Image 1 (cartoon, rainbow, N blue to C red):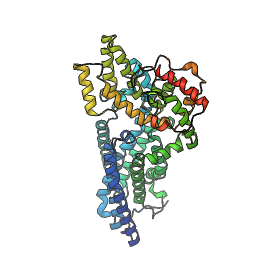
Image 2: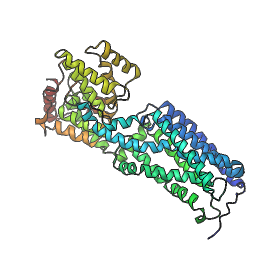
Image 3: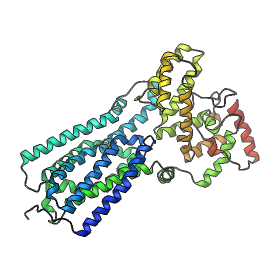
Image 4: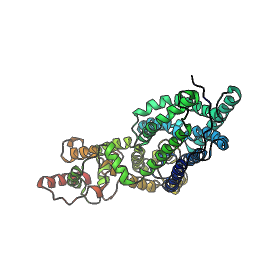
Length: 479
């Protein structure tokens, strides 16, 4: 077997120096505006689950690693041995952002399937408690703990192992040990995540990152343990530079692209049950027939129809936002009880505040801080029938412009709307769940569904059959 000498390579030739200099400059030029946009759009629904508070430090540390490893190739390795050691140890620590997203995705999917039951029972499951352990402060705590463990493993290898090799052998082996340990710990979640269907494309991002980084990870496991199986001219630092490049592009570019509506629609078209443009136009007439009535828009009409509302609720479950519909219905129930059963209404108000309004609750809805604070104060000090109005209106608008607008483009909406308008399931109508007359936007407690009038309305002429359907639906919606 050949003896590995671990000779320090000479500084890189001019061509490599120019390439690495251009590489670092291009990455910097792209990274700075990407980070700025991530910060500006940090409240976007596609970025919130990605924990921008830990993503940005990870991106900065990865770029710093790319700089140090590139400079060590340009100027020679010996002066950079301590810095290279530090970054070999930093890589598994910075990677905790990515690693924590995997179990977080699995637990979030489990919690989402339980939300409807939680709204009925009001009990907090162990999954909901676990989810609290993935908040930003805990993520920083886990990262700190991993950092301490990494340093401990390095010291053991350095002072006990006494391994032959170049100046970075101990740090490289520490990186390998941590990488293998993390893979073993995450194995269960890596299997479970394959069955998850999330609306934020976290699974897709994870899969793309795994495919891109898998060859580099295999090399990173084998090389520190058995460097003799590689060619004497093999330079491991290029592997690290390649890994940081893939990680920077995947963890910064892809989440940022998701905040652009055009890219998101294109991606949804590739991965979702979206209807063709021609089919969507055909729905305009049917949607108009269903929605045209005095003072009721399409979304409210859908909320007032039991079958459509149930179909929409099922869609929000797949979008991980069913709590919006549940909250909307709960507020309607509160309003219905406020005059007839004040004590029951008060208990329900506290339940709504605890389960939907309080920060960190399992069914927390997305509200502004001011609205949240005002609602919680009124529930405790000055409960009225209109206590939840501002929050309910905000959630109504959020559903109408977001999840309902997405639902309208799916085959599920097409089938549900055609089923109702064509009268194939007329026996399952929404009698008894219609709003009170005179209210432009009443709130139904028995059916959680929504539809956007601006996207359904059309000027396509109606046939005589359509006119008869329109009269039927108008009577059904208004009565």
